[in-house]
Length: 98
Image (cartoon, rainbow, N blue to C red; front, side, top):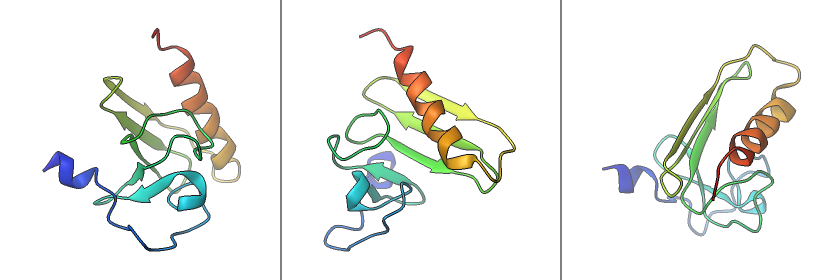
């Protein structure tokens, strides 16, 4: 079931130019969340197959099975939420020891 959720179901569909999902940013769309399909196009760190979803007021979560990572971000930032989400992923991935 998890593999099905984390599979891109927008193959062949243009998608959105937003960082939530869209081929221009390296993401497709699984069952209820954005799924990375291309590392080179991502504007934030991650691996192919990582998944995330942003909440309306700035909250966000990310799951990356390759790195064994689950991270939650709870902030009320309705006007500055996209930069805050990007900074969140930058900081989380910067702390990983590889």
